[in-house]
Length: 160
Ligand SMILES: [Fe+2]
Image: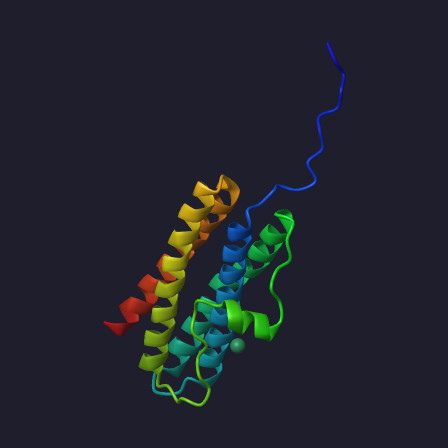
């Protein structure tokens, strides 16, 4: 019989590929937020209110993921990307080009294309983290991908 305290594990050891993947997820989520605000602020037309509110809902759906991704990277003992330059380097979502005017339908198409890119990236990350023995990260991304699939369905439905 021993009263020895359990060994302390200050952090979950993570594979570098999982952390790198999470930084791609984090940068992509930040780009989705910036794009959603561009659409929210600049959309015009007879259905302004619908689009304006829909793009704010998209922003609010993605917002909680940013903090969860950053903190997951910290739990794994690494450092999340934060600078605009790092976001540009790591994002899988395309940054909406402010020099390119978009009507409301083009904003929805662009947002949908980015949702699909992020869904693909999440599927990749779910498989990758499972292979790397990190079910916690896999579970986090499994929850997030369902939010993105719902957003993609909303956006696709608006295109008719
Ligand atoms: Fe607003």
